[in-house]
Amino acid sequence: MRSRNVAGLEALFLGVLLGGASLLSQSLPTSGPAVEGSPAWFLQGSVPDPTGRTIVDAEGRVTIPPRGNGPGPSPAAAPVAPPAAIIETPPCRRSPLCGKRAGISRQSLQRVQWRQTMGYTFAYPYALPSGFGGVPAVALDSKNNLWVFQRTDPGKPQVFKFDVNHKLILHVGPDVIGYQDKAHGMAVDVDDNVWITAANSATVMKISPDGKLLLTIGERGRRGDWDEAKGQRLLWQPVMVAFARNGDVYIGEGHANESPNDAEGDDPANNIGAARIIHLDKNGRFINQWFGNEVGQGKFSSAHGLAVDPVNGDVWIGDREEYRIVVYSADGKFLKTMQMRNLVCALYFDSHGNPWMATGQDGQFLKLDRNGKCSVRSATAWASGPGSSLRPAIGRWTRGTTCTPGIRASVASRKWQSLKVSSGVIAVQPGGDDLFQELPEGALYARRRPHGGPASRSGLPH
Image: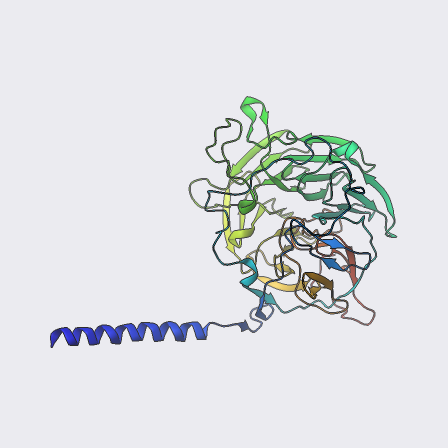
């Protein structure tokens, strides 16, 4: 009798647990109203992930070819890759930072979409050379020229300069900068020099306004650790660069689930294997560095986004896969961590000192406050087409771009210090009327507030 009572109680308890779990799963919200200055939100499926391989035609239509046997340049037309053009960089493996192989796919996730509050239509004034790969970053200089950093085949130019009339006026070829393997970040300093980062090449390069190579930091194809005491100045997966007001340079290194696991390896020059920030002066001389795996608070597994607060010099780090922003002081002291609801692909401060964030696999640009709360939202605009084809949606807001290698974004302020953000490329001109944006993996387009549209500019940097 006692055993039957116990069994009955256990069954009742199990039923309550299962019923509660069912009620809980049914009661999870899928949308929410605007609250305390943040826009309303809703859940929406992820955007297809092209994983860095696309074909973009002259009208901006984007096609994702099958991997391995997709369409591409014919063997006769394809340039011959110079020796060691592509760096053999191992994938992420044997680390908890790597994606779980048998786990949930990115495309199955529901993403938080904030209600769009800016109201833009789209046009396509820029044309780039055709080919595989996309535009990981853009930047604007003080003369309103648009610099573009493209992923493409070895032997082709990767850096382009367009004037205010959208005319190509300069390209920087491989004879100057070599092949940028996994081209990633770009920013323009106060002297209009262009800085680019290539993750697999393990270099950061400084290019003059007329396309001359001024400085190379790191050794091409030799990823490793910076040890100033030994005179060892290597970079490990550099993904982004940002500047302080005094010209100091911060380099964000580490791509988390896309970086090789070099931790405690046999190479004495490359055995830390953790995300880090390198702090240099404007001439490339070492000042400091700090790591994302130090004991205590302030951990970050990637430095995919990087921006310097113009008000106080704090360094904001976008830890993409952990959905968080980690803030350090200019001299590398941890200050705070802000947990976000979207993939933190890139960060930027506009000319008013307002922080912005670009998100991944849902295509949004979010204006934040200094506590990480979303205040306004603008989304990129391309939608899924038949099969693996992606077509930009003209004149309406849809799901946005993805956060993958080769799809980044850049926002420029009045000082034209660009932001590399990782889902589309965007640059905001003074006044906030024009936004230059990259479609997934190649085609650039601008979006302009239509005549008679919203007059307020409060939601845009200017």
